[in-house]
Amino acid sequence: MAFNSSRFRSMKRSIRRLQNAQQQPMSRPFAETDPLEQSSESEQIITVHLEQNSSEHMPSKTLASPSFNKADVTMQQLIKSGREGMLYKAKMTHGTIRGHTMFTCKIYKDAAKHEQVQTEVSIMRNLTTHLNLLQLVDWDITDVPYMLIMENAEYGSLRTFLRLNKERLCKDAELQHLFTIALYHIAQALDHLHSKMKPIPFRWYPPEYFKHDFYEFKGDVWAFGIVIWEMQTFGTVPYPDLKTSEEVVRYICAGHKIRDPEECRPEMLQMMRDCWQEPYIMRPSFLDIVKVLEKILENDRDYVNIESCPFIVAVESEDRD
Image 1 (cartoon, rainbow, N blue to C red):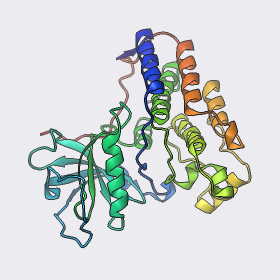
Image 2: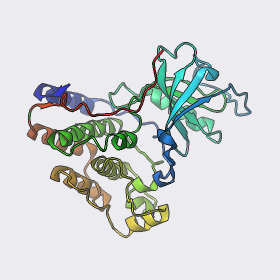
Image 3: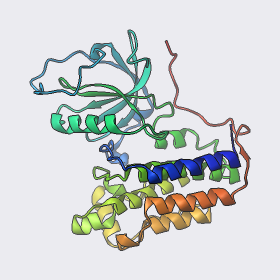
């Protein structure tokens, strides 16, 4: 696998098409709990079987009938735990779900409102296919626990991927180039979706939310700056010296910014600072960010061969049927 000028031109054509495409609304993102409160069980292999549940939460109307039975879904590994529910790496014990044996399964907590879940399903069904989005495969929201089936997230969450590869990843020019490519695609997807990611944890919230109870898409730009910081620090929890949400809120409202990561390339450091500008109207749009990343990629060497970097470790996968 290699990144060269022809692939870069292809990316540029892709973003031009996205700029001319009609904007699509984004589904509510999966909100994680405070990372400091999470246990290490997200990296443990677990197996859970669900039984079909006849619940009082029967909706009056569903979007479609599921093509699978919940009892045939086996949860093999917890990817992420959040306020709304859990994301698992899962598989079918019998047959497939629309051709998928391995997939990502989102299970909502019993307290989740059916209307909210139904809205999320409707939005995900209408999203156009994108390289950086897990596509919705099937769902069962006829009774609790509500369940969404998405494409297999082979490498797990970004934080888990970075932590597993921390010792092997060398902070050289090729690695920074690959990080830039990853950020380019993330920004590209966010510009495509024009998202409003309100249910994100406090460590990703912008100061205007705490001060004025105000959130709009420039708040997503602030959060994107935090994502850059996470990638540059190999999955370190933002504001690692602050243990509680209250400390984080006070720190942000006082005008403090997260400390600069070590050995960060200047272009990425400047982009982080731009994403955290106040007032929020001073922050760039995702279209602006994509243009800057395009320029960085263009200025980098025209050819980066990553076949010489066989050190990337995926989340351990089970045998496929």
